[in-house]
Length: 123
Image (cartoon, rainbow, N blue to C red; front, side):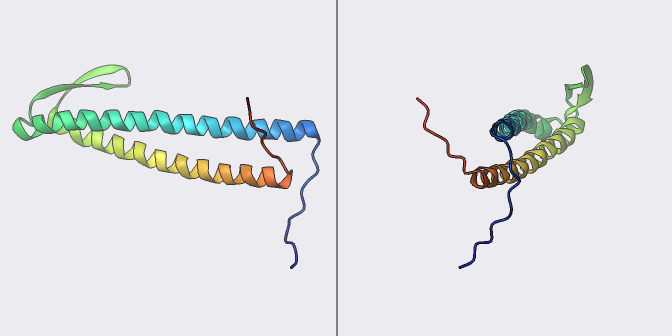
């Protein structure tokens, strides 16, 4: 059985360590952003749940929305579609970041295999 390993560019120990740390920090940054956006999407869902009752009972009811640091008066029927669009956009961004995280994680695993890196248990 022939081995189909690609040729690995030789790196110094310091370069390997630097690249390893870079992978870890990139993965951590993406995971952090995913968590932040998921929290924001949950907040949008909570507000939409609250406004749903107002939308059914009195769609012309006043509500206030913060847009770019400015508090704007709108009606519930105007705010709900905008919030739904924002929430859906956030969820789409989360999916994109999750895909990015997965591909970066695979790249990291390949790097660890290529340079025979094994993580020793921490105490």
